Length: 405
Image (cartoon, rainbow, N blue to C red):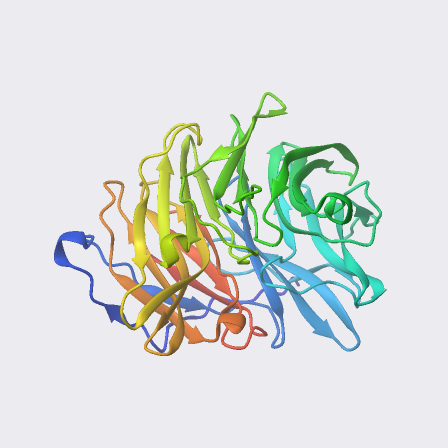
């Protein structure tokens, strides 16, 4: 008999309502409820993806003696499936900023991508990105393959993945192969099919910020990636690139923040795509003032509405970033990020209506910036699922924001 992890729904121990001016409050208040998931204690680096039916799929890395195991489970509206193993290896990276991902293709195959440490000392170390495919519902997997042609012991990380055809996915990542010679990182992409075969390695942007997470999504009409760019003046604003008809368009800015910073803030954007509608959320420190911003597009990112501030730096309160976002079918945006308030670090969430009415802010969890990590959100009907790394970074948590399906 197939074992499943049954749904356990409990109200979070702390749900703190923070004051928002009445004219900025949404009319509806969404509940936040925690879900028990199959990740064992000590698990790290959770991620969420959606299949063709908008059903969330959770991946994570869990400890197993002297090794690590990449596992995943899928949600069927009532419960999680039994966890399935992709690969085990002691060098799997379990970084919440650059977690492993598992996607289900419309044709039914699964593709996984993850990072493994390489090198033998601190002066000669890096990461390789590996991928594997399964056509047996995750029971067996193809031999892992390195997704990049570059073999140098350098960083290949901060990847994102999305299905881009019935039997194919595209992976984007930050690549440092040119860092030693030209002092730059670049954004790259590759296509992987349902048998684990690779093709079409491309450079999307030859100059990017070095270690900010990327975000990637696709529809039938286009694939879209958002990331933190870079130029010689050390401006590190959020950029977008679109692939249509099999070709990447020239990258452009989501918004001209003009944030000049002489180092990577390790704070990438989040992206959600629903039909032709797109929502991007990001952190900026432009003008020496921390802020979380949302920009929406109704034409797959060709143009954007003026950004909306979701959180700004005030006395006793400062947004930290680590953003997540999903765009519901109704047009409502659900966004989450880390916030420092009165000496405490909290994972918070709020909704933004189609008319840009900002909803009330809720606290989902409290802990440390490193422990809470990088939340991930995906829609599921009228509600959204969120995952994060718990208070310590070694406790995969999941919750539903909105109606429980």
